[in-house]
Amino acid sequence: MKPLEQELCLLRSGRKIKIMAKIMVCKVENGNVKAYDAKGSYIRGIATGAVSAVVNGEVITVTKSNGRVELYDANTGSFKRSI
Image 1 (cartoon, one colour):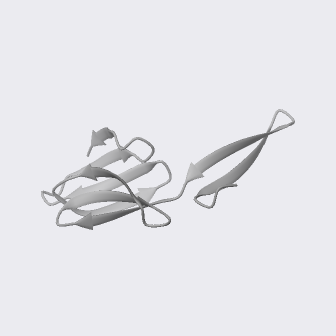
Image 2: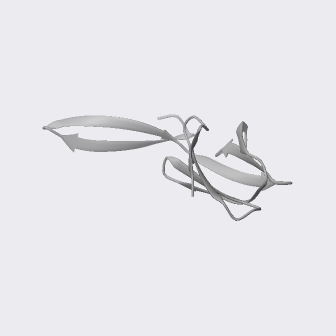
Image 3: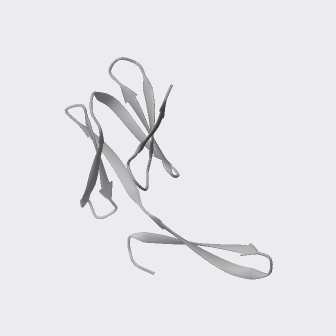
């Protein structure tokens, strides 16, 4: 297993399935949400105009300065929806 990946094993239909998930953290710098891996290497920019960001599984929840909440896919960084 690579050091930046977490191995999850599921038992399904009598066989073992491995799912690899990258460990990620988000940081808000001057309103810009940036994603980093567990070693601190920059992965990608996610959003602008943010006051906070939280990674929850495969979703990044970004609270914007106007009070809106935007959801992004943690794997691709693509916008999913706004609340």
